[in-house]
Amino acid sequence: PNRLVAAQNAAKQFVAEQPENVRVGVVAFAGTATVAQAPTRNREDVIAAIDRFQLQRATAIGSAIIVSLATIFPEAGIDVGTLTYGPDSSKKSEKMSGAGAHKPVPPGSYASAVIILLTDGQRTTGPDSIQAAKMAAERGVRIYTVGVGTPEGKVIGFEGWSMRVRLDEETLKAVADITRGEYFYAGNAVDLKKVYQALNAKLILERKKTEITALFAGLAALLAVVSAALSLAWFHRVI
Image (cartoon, rainbow, N blue to C red; front, top):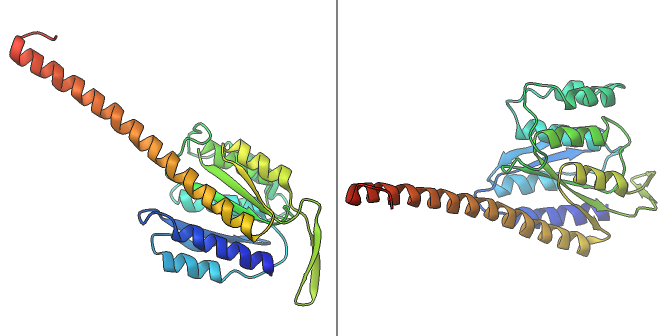
C-alpha cells in the first residue's frame, strides 16, 4: 500500500508538470492491462484515473506495453485480445512483433509519444515483456522504465493475503535498451519523485531539440531560395 501511494503521488506531480498541449493517457495493469484513461489534455481526468488504482495480484508487463501501443496507434489494428490472453500469448506476441501492415522504423524515432512504465515486480503472466518491447521498438516508441522496490525481493501483505515481490531490473533495463529509452531505479518515495523530475526535463529537452533543428534547417533553405530569387531578379544571375 505504501508503494502504491508513493507511486500515485509522484505520478500526479509528473502529470501536473506537463505542458498544457501534451496529452497524457493512463494504462493500469496487474493480471491484465486496461486503459484507465484515454490520452487527454484534461489533467483532472488523468489524476482521477491515477487515484482509482487498487492493489491486485499478478504483473502483466507485456500486456501493459501492448495496450499502450494500441492506445498510441488506434488505427494500427493491433489485436490486443489475441496478443494478451491465453497460454500462447508469448508466442503470439513474437509473431506479431514483425507482422502487421506497419513498416518498421528505427527504434526511438517516433517523436509524438513515449511510454513510461512503472512497476515494483516482475512479469508473472501475459505476453513476454521483451517481445512486447520489440513491438514498441519497431514502431519507434521509446519506453522509459521505472523500477520501484527491491531487486532481492520482499514479502508484502495486504487485506489478508501476502505475496513475494521482486523487482526484475534486468528485464526493465532490456526493455528500455531495446526501445532506446532509459531505466530508472526508485528505492523510495523521494527517489521516485526525483525520477519523475528527471523524466520531465529529459522529455522536454528532447522535444525542443527536434523542433529547433527542424526550424533552423527550414529557415536556412528558405533564405537560400529567397536569396537566389532576388539575385536573379536584380542581377539576372545567381551570386
